[in-house]
Length: 96
Image (cartoon, rainbow, N blue to C red; front, top):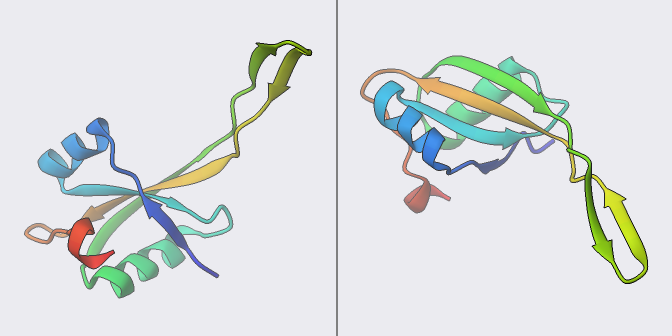
């Protein structure tokens, strides 16, 4: 099972990275915190001190077309915020 799907790189997360040494990933919705911690440590060779997870449901969206209103939902996903040991970093651009 592929636990880590992709890193999330947003302005809010980059502020967390600079101030608190935290990184965010989209993860498999079936993965628990222990599996996520093991996957990050194995893939990047760092020490994880904490894992926080949250589930997001897809919001209901609608748009108007010639045929009428089309409604749907984007896919739901699970996000993990990883806190690393002080002094350790993850460089996404050279390791992925």
